[in-house]
Each structure stands twice: as C-alpha cells, then as structure tokens.
Amino acid sequence: MHFTRRLLDRGLPVTLAFVVIPAAGVVASCASDDDDDGARTEEGLDAASLDGSPKDAGSEPAVASDAGVVDASPLPIVCGAGACATALVTTLETDSDRGEGFCALLRDGTVACWGASSSGRLGRGEDAGSGSRPARVDGLVKVVALDHTCALDEDGATWCWGTGPFLRDDAGAVSTERVPVKLPIPPATHVGVGSTAACAAVDGGILCWGENLWGQVGPRPAMPFAGTHPPRQVALPPGAPVRRIAVGYATFVLREDGAMVTWGYNPSLGRVSSLFPDPYPAPMSVPGVSTVDVAGPDVCATAGGTAYCWGAVVPKSTEEPIPYPPIGRALPEPVVVPEPVVQIATTSTTRTLATDRGIIQPYRWCATTLSGAVYCVGFNESGQVGSGNKDYVHEPVRVVALPEPVASVQTTWNTTCALTTSGKVYCWGSNFYGQLGNGKSRGESLVPEEVVLP
Image 1 (tube, one colour):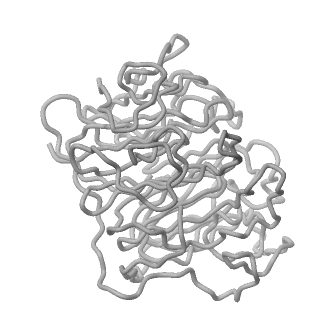
Image 2 (cartoon, helix red, strand yellow):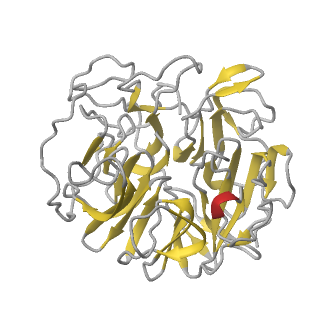
C-alpha cells in the first residue's frame, strides 16, 4: 500500500546553493470579516532586521540564488506487512513536561500515542497509565490527518483530546479531555492546534478560536486579546486553497501554491510588521513554501529544498531580559544543511535551562533531506540530536544508525522521532516519559530505537 503525504506539520544565516522560485498565481478567495476595522494603529517599529536594527519595509529575507530548482517532495511511505504509520506528530507542550509525547496515524485510520501521559494527551481515558508503549487513542476511526492532539476523520469531523483550546458544548471554554471529543464546528479539511488557540479550514473560510493573547484569533476591539473566544471567521487575502494550518504564538495558513499567510505574535510572523502583535492576516515574503512547523514562538519552513527558521529571541542567561519588541529573529533565514531539505521540525525556545554546563538555550531543529537522511542541531543533553554523544551540537550532524530512509521527523525538547519510508517509527534521546515507545521507562538512547506500534 502506498502513502504519499506532505508532512507539513534553527540555525545559522548561511545561504545554501538552492534557488527558490515564486509560486503560481492565486486561484481562490476566503470569506470576509466584518470585525476587521481595516486600520493598523498599534504602536511599534516600522520594520525590523534580523539583528534588531531598522530595515526598509520592502526588504526580503535572504534566499539562495546560485543553482537550479530542487524538487523537494517528501519521500513516499510504502507499507509492508505488520504495523505501519503514515503520519507522525508531537503532542501539545505543557509547563509540566514540555510536550514530551508523540502520536502516529496508522494505516487503518486509527491513532496511537505514547510518551507523557499527563493532562489526557494520550487519549486513553482516566486510567491511561504509563505511556511507554504506544496504544490506540479511544474511539478514533477513519482518521485522515493529525495535528498534535487533534484529528480529522474522512467525514471532516474534528476530534481533539488533552489540554488545549478545545470546545465544550457551551463553546469557548478551555478544557481537558481525556478521550477525544468531537468539536461543534462545521466539517473541516484542515485543522491546526496550538496550546492556547486553534484554527480550521471549513467551507467558506477559516475559523479560529481559543485565547487571543497574541492576536491568533482576530483583531481587537471585536476580539480582545484577553479571554477565550468561540469560533469566528478570519478574513484572509484572496489566494489558493489551503494545504496546511499551523498554530503557535502566531497562525500560519499555507496555500497549495506555496504562498503563506500569517498573523499573531511578532516576530513569529516571518514578515515585516509594525504591530506587536499583528492580528491581521498578510502574506509572508518567502515564496514556494512546501512545509512549515511551529513550536510556540519558533517557526521553521522549507521552500525549494532550502530550510528557513525564525522566531523568538532567547536570552543567554536568566538575568538577561528579553528585548521588546523582540525582533532579533524576525525574518526567515536559511539554515545550514548539507543536502536539499524536504521537511524540518523545531522546538520551542521559551525557556532557558540551568545545567552543570551553565545556562543554555534548548534551541534545536531536525530536518529530513531528499535522500531520506536526518540532520539535527542544538540542545543534546539526552542524546536527542542523534550524534552518538551528549555534546551540544552547533552545526548540523547526520543522525547515526537510522536503518532506512526517513519521510519525516518530529522533535520535542528531549527526544526525536522519525517516520521511515516503510512506515516504521524510530526514536532517540530521553525516555523519561516513555517517549522512545519501546515499552521501557526512564533511561535514554543515543541511537534510534524502533517504536513498538500496535
């Protein structure tokens, strides 16, 4: 059985030798919004460069220009005998365990999760027990897509579990659901969920709901930044149909033509804006985007074989304040990878860590390449980079001992998991919450271990 999926779900400012070309013209439009007052009157800087200095409003992020176009499509998944996964995601991050869990969409349309079991994120009810071995989420069938702890079934119904911006029957309340609940929204084609806000693509446009702290749900005064809000339509600029929605501190709508519209937290937007936050959807300047991954304020994306990352500024010590406006990584910058990249995953840098090596930033990303290799960089206290040791990795290294090509990779702070082209999942790094999915508890692994899928 064949599955070909665009698994849409940090780095150094070095340009790679791959060119990015503008995508095709737009072909459709989304619904309008009567709440938008059309005026951008928030105070803030006119524009920002990556080093925090003023920059012309028309400036673009750096893109490569020295070689031919790379057709960087994810490798297909070909299921053989036995258990087979067709998509891989992380669970939502929480303050207690930083989202140390994973879920896989299985070829029979069910979902299996493992790792941290707090707050119902494994979807197994009150008696979830240890998450060290993957088990199916209660009641989910005929699932066609996943985003963290939300799933879409073949009828377009949205099901969510755990702690997040999920709706109860009375709408608008943030809830903890230990088994999947069907959200009271129209049938959707795509869903994106963050820790505090979520959006779905439905007939007629985009619906968003949850907390509006960073303007992910809509502009004020109609949608105050404080409080929790029921679903409301968000007006997007005219454009092609939606391919992917991703939600963190900012919201990202990726279109079929590779254009991406963003709104919310700035600098997560990936575009020049004078608003902090900016609740008005507007196009991001990198063309031809194929995948995007969001973790809190941090974002990575791929376009034409090149990976880009941007987002939050993290202080180098706990005594150093975060600058405001936090514009130091405001625009996409290419990151160094030795091969053309087809997908990249990142982790949130919202905290610093005190270790025996001093105060460090848990910044990292992992990327899959056109050849099926995985490269990682950054925080490596548990061996989650896959270098075979625990040294902090400043330049991307190829993950050792992966037995077959990889279609996609997902990262938490302390663990990394990869979905191979045969539908198997391998994980490495910390196993404190059972993230390795090998049936064992605690410990760690410096090399990939196969997850025991149901």
